Amino acid sequence: MDGPTLQDLAERWLDHKRASGRGMSDNTEAAYRADLNAWGRALADHHAIDTPDQTRPLEALHTGHLTAEALTAAAASFYREGKTAATRSRRISALRGWCAWLVRTGHLTADPTTDLETPRLPRRLPVALTDAQLAAIVQAASTPWQGARAQWVRLDRALLALFAGAGARTGEVVALRVGDVICEEDGGGLLRLRGKGGAHRNVPLHADAMQPVTDYLDERRALLGPFDAEDPLLVARNGKAITTGMIEYRVDQWFRRAAVRRPEGELAHVFRHTYAVGVLQNGASLNELQAVLGHQNLATTSIYTKVAAEGLKDVARVAPVLRHLRATRPAPTSAPPG
Image (cartoon, rainbow, N blue to C red; front, top):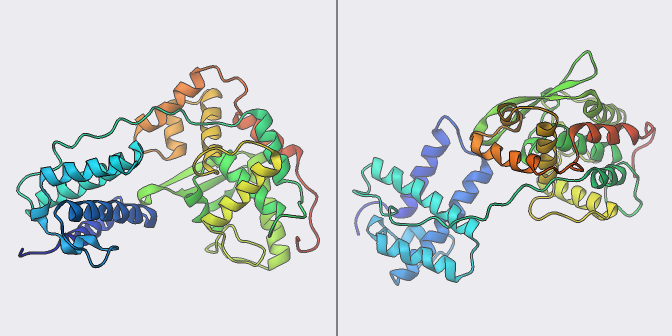
């Protein structure tokens, strides 16, 4: 077939997404590539086309291969492979966005995804920590542990304060710079977060959540030397910026040492859920919660009203989070940790 390959068109679409007003994070781009490649492999199988490079199956395909019949067969193959409803739904969403762009740009005369049915996803309520669970985790994060690799108590407490005291996502915490933390006269602060799609938001930090961050910065300055506003906010003992993997390891250690059951999925996200439920139970409106969480769609935020309305009286609120951090504040460290 003449014309650009689907690989070429996929790259153009991703360029378009990057150049849009909302932008596109590295994680989002990686997810789009993985989903389009999955469609490419399934379409190649349906059309009995050899794909020499399995990592770029779209190079062997053209727009003529994007038929409604072929896409239905590909979607059915995902089901037979045992892909979850969430995975299949995400792949269909990515395909629809791409095909809509192909129609707008004249590469397709009609959208072949019209008849694709999106799998119904199970309605799962966010999991939030109870006050007892949160107390155990704060205690674990605040206690030196001889067997822990590269432990730094003040760093752990700062992480916990940002997750449980501000509802920040892991990616947002990794992206923080020193200058993104603004101290206020009352001991509290303001946290400037870079959210999904490049959106920015400011989240207030209570003084008891600000204190662990300040303690960490003071100890970091004493142990590792001065830093600038543009330097990463959170670094390991060797001075290197923390990564998502490092955060997951540290949070996993908190749960294990606290003997608290580890939730499914990204571990740190449970603190965001706990924060969100606490904000609602402390009287905030749904719109206020949407603003601090950085949700673009109010419907995403509204799921927390279900949790708050179910009378989960032992769900940790923001106040208990701060109380536990305040009660476990360690003494200053005069020598490098570990």
